[in-house]
Length: 191
Image 1 (cartoon, one colour):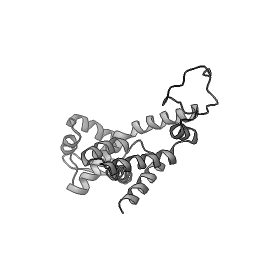
Image 2 (cartoon, one colour):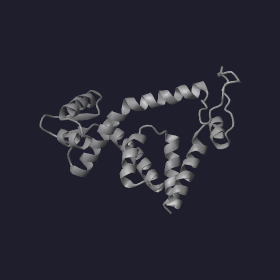
Image 3 (tube, rainbow, N blue to C red):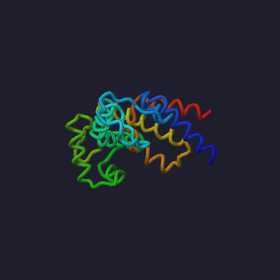
Image 4 (cartoon, rainbow, N blue to C red):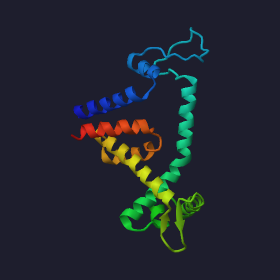
């Protein structure tokens, strides 16, 4: 257990040190004040540990990135699942999607219409769904991101059940830079 905790902290430390801005990293690492040229807070304001704000532009970018990820994550989840069903079952039916995503068939039907409009899937009445070339590319990308996050969490010692749940949400909100670091960490700890 101690080794797993050490791996967890080592992995998170590596990610933080390589991904976060220098100011924010130094704040976390050394509890140094961050510089924010746009800050108008008075110097007499009490300092609350862990409450430092990143520079305005960086903070705005963080929220914009999260909003963009939220817009596409449900679409990516559906396309990824359709790709997985096609690969492992040979077909992707609306009933299978509904049961695996724990939603109604009406919800799946609405999403299938949306995916058709986005030209990510094709469907015919009483037939399986099929991914277009754009849908296949999105499914492959989403599956690759998912696998990197899942294997990283397992390498940290997270249980399989928890890693699967956490990876499902994290895959949409992790930058390519962080994914690359996660992948390197996982490869280094599989040896």
